[in-house]
Image 1 (cartoon, rainbow, N blue to C red):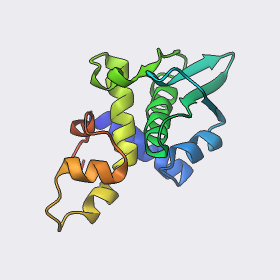
Image 2: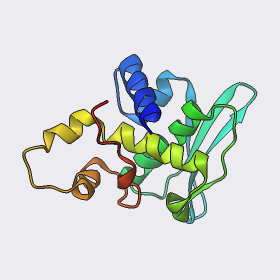
Image 3: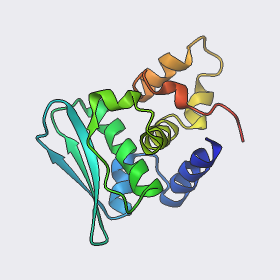
Image 4: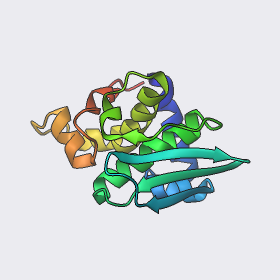
Length: 147
């Protein structure tokens, strides 16, 4: 999904960051840590021109970063849609919007610059994904083309 990679690049360039929390702040998206059920990682809500991302604060910092990236993907790619809860099992989802949001998150956290730093190593894409805080279940969404 080269088009998502291009959008992520535009967002990174505009906000001079690939930190999802920082980008949300700059985009005036309210990130709210919340005590959600253990099966729920987070969700995106659009209400009266306001955007909210709820993140389960019981998750590890690394997973909160991924969830924020995923929900930011919804805010950028599907801005007026309210998303269902991102559940632990949703990472396997074949729903178009969920796959697009996962792809956005992977491209944001594993940008080409980061990947290139590991070019001379024997690390697999799975290992690089782990270093970048991307769950192994979605690393395959990384577009490795240089276009």
